[in-house]
Amino acid sequence: MSTILFVRIQSDLDFEELERRALERLPRFKEVPGLIQKLYGKDPSTGHVCGIYFFEDAQSLADYRDSQLAKSVPSAYEATGVRAEALELMFSLYPERGPVSA
Image 1 (tube, rainbow, N blue to C red):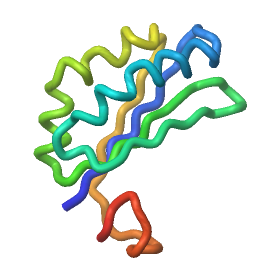
Image 2: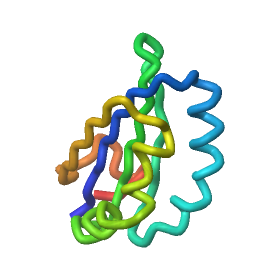
Image 3: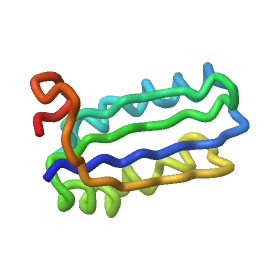
């Protein structure tokens, strides 16, 4: 079953610096086994940024969470707060569209 990881990060860095760091790290995420897609977002009211990850299965998510790449996220963005939530995908409104097929 596909798994979703939602990570919200608070940082005192300005958005341009957060975006630069995210783009710099992007190629490393393309190499994560079982990662189907990652979406990058920003809350315009708070300046917090987020990553929404779609994994093939729970084991792929668990392996990622144990990786050095995952553990480096807070320091890479000089996070002052991190909230992470893992969810199992129930179904999608449009199964024919990405990022995953239910």
